[in-house]
Image 1: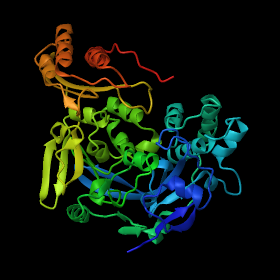
Image 2: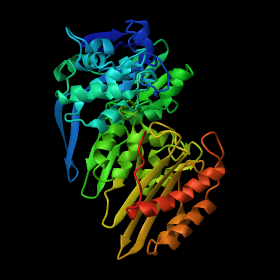
Image 3: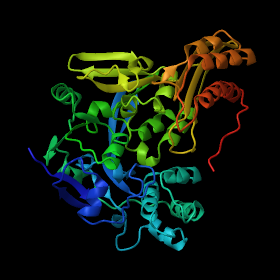
Image 4: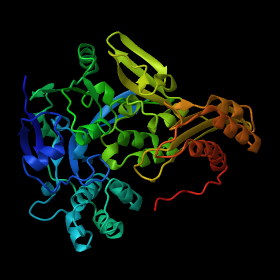
Length: 484
């Protein structure tokens, strides 16, 4: 059955009868002619195409595994429209730079103009959108928050000082809410179960059972989480998605559960939501999450999608493996649970069966005597592909290492544990001799490739050196690396 895509566009109800795999950027520029949203990289990197996406926000809260939901205001977050499919905005609100201005300029627009924060202007709409999203959603934001909000927006003309100053001005004045529909209005545009147009079909199951039935009946359909990986091919290579099963509305996959000892994230939980939960438990993991994706990417990309793509350079898996993460796989036949390191078989091949989906990922909370760090080496500090990613977790008891988990990305065809390096630490007093043995074991185990990110020799040296960095970091010697 053909259905129109329904959403709010700049506060007004909108219907679009287009293929659900058309990018939002292409639609905005071609149909309503809202050309303030620019196309730059078409890969989700430059931020010129940034828009705000609004959802009725339900914040999960739990105590000892008992989950409740509290309805709040419509939550707006920045997203890259170049890698966002039209089907993904069904039932949501979309705000472009044109929609920020009412009778008067939005405070961010006014501050940018008064502060001389724009030259050529090509990047400016995306920057305004990013700062407007921050001003609407984070009371008391500081300079770190402003820099984080702008990490996904490139500007080659103005320089960031006057842009940051404009952001400070708006934040200090108390921020600014986004004018738009209230939560109750979204009942008029509830997402369709299926959208079909021009040969493309977009399924939006609302429960795990319906998702698993679709997965069994349509094993070749694309499973779509946030689309931050798949969307690049959609935009860059002009490939089409004839049949998609979206995970965005599956309630079980959107759940976050907290027990006394564990955190469990549904596969469709975004990295922004993961960041909010893990920051207090694992600050080093939180730093990694901020680095491997901008706000626009973190608000779309999901923890299940990051695992499911099975990339050898995915930043999430090394940290999760070192933490002892367990992945839940679900089908109509039942559920099974695997240590995450056993999920990856070989390059881009996983344990996932044709009728299965990733349902959740769980990690233990920190234990007594545990030290955890994760390090990413890349050519650029923010938003870059890893050359090497290393994660270390040890538990010390009475001065000795009782257990160790070490995992690497970018060193093999899959994310891998460094078993011999772990054994070099277990039972040691975590001294120079143990670290040297650990580094030697890392060098002996891995045989990385040479590519444009780094040579095999470079990777081996970096991987071994990160063991010493972990040792010195735990001892309090590491100097913080600042982004320039």
